[in-house]
Every structure is written in C-alpha cells, then in structure tokens.
Length: 164
Ligand code: ADP
Image 1: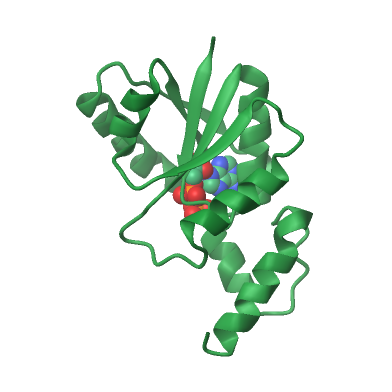
Image 2: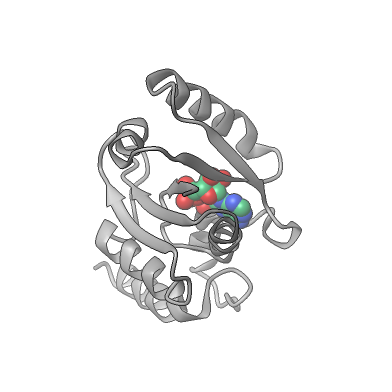
C-alpha cells in the first residue's frame, strides 16, 4: 500500500493545496493531510477549524483522511508506519525551505523520504498568507480558495475587523 502524508499549516486550505491533495490522492493509495502547529505563525483558524475545512473540500476523495498534530513531523510520520511525506513546490521561494526541512526530517527519521509535486502554473504564486492579505479588500476569491470555504473565510475576516 502506497501511503503518504501531506503536512502543512493550511490556514486556510487554498486551491493550490487542494490541487496537490487531488494529485497526491491519485498517486498514493492512502493520503493523510496533517494540519501542523507552526509556532512561528499566528493562525487565523484553529487546528480544528482547519481540519474541518479540509474535510469538507475533500469529501469526494475516499482515500484522503485529515488529522492534526502538534508534534514533530518526523515523529508523527514514524507513528504512522511506512510512508512518505509529500509536499508542494512553488516557484523559487519554497525550494530552500523545503529542501532544508526534507533533509532535517530524513536525519531525524532515516526511513522517511520527502517527495515533491510541482505547483500547477495557475497556483504557483498562491499562498495562504497572500489570500489573507487579499481578504482585507473586496476581491473575488474564487480563483484562490475552494468555493465551500469562502464563506468561512469572509466571516472570519469580518470578525477580525470587528476586533473579535
Ligand atoms: P502556505 O505557504 O500557503 O501557508 P502551508 O505551510 O500550508 O502553505 O503549505 C503546505 C505545503 O503545501 C508546502 O509544501 C507548500 O509548499 C505547499 N503549497 C502551498 N501552497 C501551494 C500551492 N499554491 N501550490 C502547490 N503547493 C503549495
């Protein structure tokens, strides 16, 4: 059984993430999308909210599961058994960071390999942080976020604007 884990912050899940999920779900028999705690980033959505949003947009993919972890990725992967890490690779900026993380994870857990799917050209410059910046303006988000979560995103922007 070919089994992969796709880790990330997914704050929130974008159309670029969903594209990677769909492609990875076609390659692997089983894919676990794992929402990870990033101590540096101050999240817009809680872990549970991020898990819930990913579940909603992957409902049609029977071999995809969604979980979260507040631990170290290499240890989380070890706890899951034989698997690979799958990551998306966008233009330029991702390379250094992802290369470093893949090496560190492999060092901590030598059985763990990371495989990269290159971003589709239309999502090459799409990131959750870019979407969060756009959220302050009246921009059509349908090219950036899965339709089903746009209302959640707009509602959160509204709450934050009101100081909530
Ligand atoms: P972000 O930078 O959007 O906050 P995450 O930390 O949630 O992203 O990213 C998780 C993984 O998904 C990383 O490997 C990242 O490179 C990849 N990824 C993020 N956005 C895209 C995209 N638009 N296309 C392909 N891969 C992406």
